[in-house]
Length: 606
View 1 (cartoon, rainbow, N blue to C red):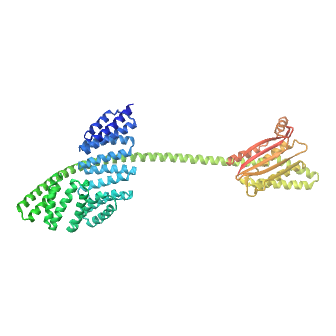
View 2 (view 1 turned 135 degrees about the horizontal axis):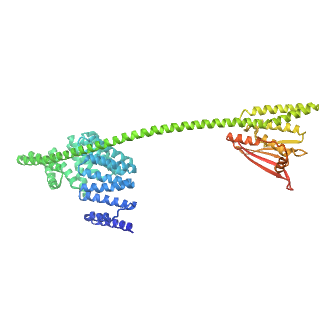
View 3 (view 1 turned 90 degrees about the horizontal axis):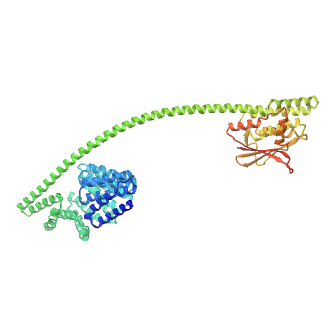
C-alpha cells in the first residue's frame, strides 16, 4: 500500500506542478519527503525521476545552478546503481547545462561528452545531436577553440544527416556556418549557409530562416557588400513581420541594429534614423551589453554624420562605458574561467596520476597472474601430453597383445594339431588326393591368416575367403558331415566393404565345436550378410546344433573342455580399436519346443 500511495502522490505532485508552475518545487519536495528509504527498484526509479525534476526547477526556473547540479548528481547516482542508461545520460546532460550557465565551459564540455557517450550506447541520435551542438557552443564561448567548435558542429551536422532529421540538419548547418564566419572563413561559411538555406526552404525548418539570413548578412558586411547585406536583413524583417509569434527580444535587437548599421554604411540616413528609433525602444531591455555597445557606437556615427559633435561625443562615451563594462565582465569571466580551468586541470592531473598508479599496479598484478597462469597451463599441458602419450602407448601395447592373441586363437595349437593329424591319417590310408587337398587348404588358410593379421581392417571378400577355407578344412575332418554356406545380399560389394580380420570365424568355430560336433549326423551352418543401413553390416551365423543349454550340460559332465577364447578376444580387439559391434545370441526351437540350434546376430559399424 505504501508503494502505491507514494506513486499516487508523485503523480499528484507532477500534475500540481503542471497547473501551478510557481509552486511545482514545493510539490516535488513534498513527494520526495514522502518517499521511504528503500531498495525497491520501482521506488528508486521514481525517486531518481523526482530528483531530476527538482534539478530542472532549480536550474530552469530559479536559476540556482548549484542546487540544480546537487539534485542532478543525486539522480545520477541512483540511475547508475539501477543501470538505467537513459537516466544516466539525462542526468549528465542536466549537470552539464548547469556548468554552461555558470560559464564553467571545460567542466560543461567534459560532462556533455559523458552524456553523449551514454546516448550513443542508446543509439539516440537526436540526443547525440543536441549534445554535440552544445559542446560546439561551449567551445565557441571559449577563446582560441574555433577548431574544436567546428569539429563538434560537423559531428552534429553528420549525425543529423545520418538520422535524416531535417530540423537538426538545418540547425547544425546554421551553427557550423556561424562558426566559419567567426573564424573569418567566409567562403566556407557562404557555402555552408547556402546549403542550409536550401534545406530550410525545402521544408526543413522555417523557424531557422532568420538565423540563416542574419549569418549571411554578416558575411556580406565583412565583404563590404552592403547592398547584398541589406537584402538578407530585409528578408529577416519580413519573416518576423509575417510571424509575430516567433519574435523575441534578442531577435528584434539583432536585425534592427543590423539594419541601422547597414543603412549607415549605405549613407541612407533617413532609414538609418527610422531603425535607430525602433532599436531605441528595446535596447534598454536587453541585458547583454554588447547590444548597447553596438547601438551607441552606431548612434555616435550618425550624430557625427549629421554634424552633431556634442551628441556624437556623448554617445561615444556611452559606447566606451558599455565596452569597458563588457571588458571588465570578460576579464572577470576569464579570471574565473582560468581559475576553474586550473582547478579542473589540477584535479584531472591528480585523477590521472591516481589512475596511472592504479593501472600500473593492475598491470603488474595482471602480469604476475599471467605468468602464474602460464606456468600452470604449461604444467597441465605437459602432464596432459605425457598422460596422452602413455595412454596411446598402453593402447598400442594392448592392441598388439590382442592381435597376437587373436592370431593364436585362430591358429591355436589344438587346431593345427588336428589338421596335421588328419593329413597324416589320410596319407596313411593312401588317400593322397584328400591329403593333398587338405594340405593345400590348410596352407592357404595359414597364409591368409598371417597376411590379414598385418592390418587392422581387410575387405569382406578376403575375410570370407579365409572363413570358407576354415569351414572346408573342418568339413574334411568331419568326413563331409559339415554343410557350410554363405548367403550374401547382392547389393553388398565384398571387395569394397572393410571389416576387422577374422571377425566371423570365432563364431563359426564355436558353432562347430559346441553345437554340431555332438550330432552324429553332422549339421549345417549358414552365414547371412545384409546391409540394413549405409554404415551398418549385419552378419547372422545360424546352426542347427544341439543348442546352448545341451552344450553347457555336456561341457559340465566332460572331463576335457575346449576353451573357445576367439569370441572374447575379438570383442576386446574391436573395443581397443574404437569399433563396438552389437552381438545378440538367439536360441532356436522346433515346433515341439525342442532345441533346434543357435543364431548369432552381429551388427558391425562400417
